[in-house]
Length: 270
Image (cartoon, rainbow, N blue to C red; front, side, top):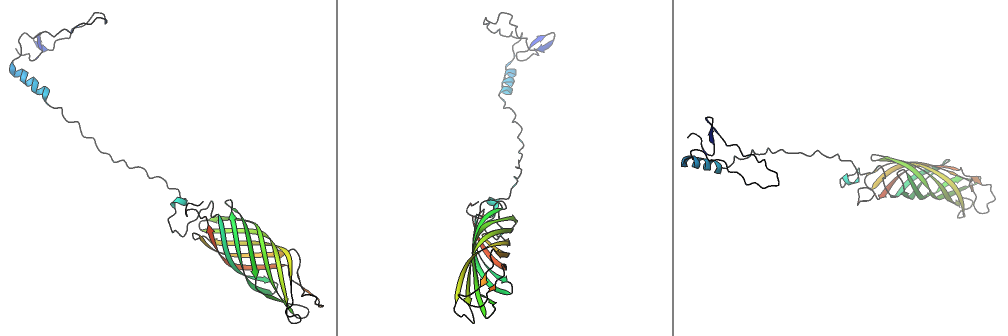
């Protein structure tokens, strides 16, 4: 009487009946053997309690613990795409610019004579440290004493050659060597007023520049020295007086301002 549900009394204990063991070959389909009924069927109250327990909802699963996963910050490598717009220190060490157009002014000395001059330069950088440049410049009038009287002269030159340089942060430096084609214009004074003559020549120019890159603009200072392959003589037309030979060397100091085309980080240029 104490065994409820499908349990049965066995050796004075309420146990579930053991399932029948199927010993026949697996090929045969054997109908399931229903468990034996207990000696005393359960009453209605026990059946109602079993139905209520079976219909009760399962306890809710434990709530998952929310874990905030914070992605590790990626390392940002400085480059053209990370240069803020309008940053005055924008530069690219690997390739500072593609094309440079610059104007400059200088003071030139040749022996005891000195004058002011100006010029224009354009350069194309085709590697990290090597560029090809062309330059044209002219000087003001200088006077030189002759055996008798004086003569005034101007010097113009055009050069084409290579320069090597390096950029460190916003600073840059380069050294250029340019063969030059020169044009000397001589005008007489005192004994030969109004008389003039021009001569073509050749020279070599070496120039060191130091500058500061401010975006597309680049102010710089430079020092230059040139040496004429042939000594020039100050003679005016058919003057009967002995001529005066000009010193072959010229030394210049000046300031310039370059405009850089193709600065990395500006309009996607490299």
